[in-house]
Every structure is written in C-alpha cells, then in structure tokens.
Amino acid sequence: MDIIRIIFAILLPPLGVFLQVGLGMHFWLNILLTLLGYIPGIVHAIWIIAKK
Image 1 (cartoon, rainbow, N blue to C red):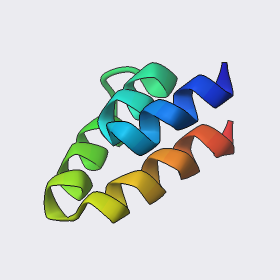
Image 2 (image 1 turned 120 degrees about the vertical axis):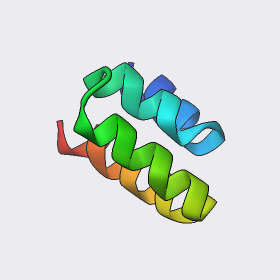
Image 3 (image 1 turned 45 degrees about the vertical axis):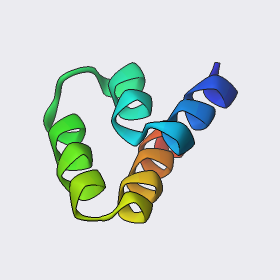
Image 4 (image 1 turned 180 degrees about the vertical axis):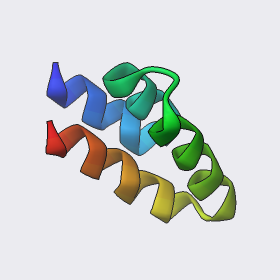
C-alpha cells in the first residue's frame, strides 16, 4: 500500500498525505507547500508516508 501512496504523492502530493493521515494538520500544510512549489509538496508527502 505504501507504493501506491508514494505514486500518489508524486502525482498529487496532497492526495498521498490524505491517504496517510486524513484531514489533519499535515494535509493542510502539504496543500500550502504544493501551492508554493510542487517539489516541496512532494518532499513533504514522501516524508509523511515514509515516517510511518
């Protein structure tokens, strides 16, 4: 399942974070990071998924 989340994190970072933690603080932070720059959103999403 983590492979699918990582693929979603690369294609659409907030979706990968949502699948991992739901509508928490990390989800909203990831949306902000993705809007500020796509790469920071990807890095944050992969970090959240790998932290598990």
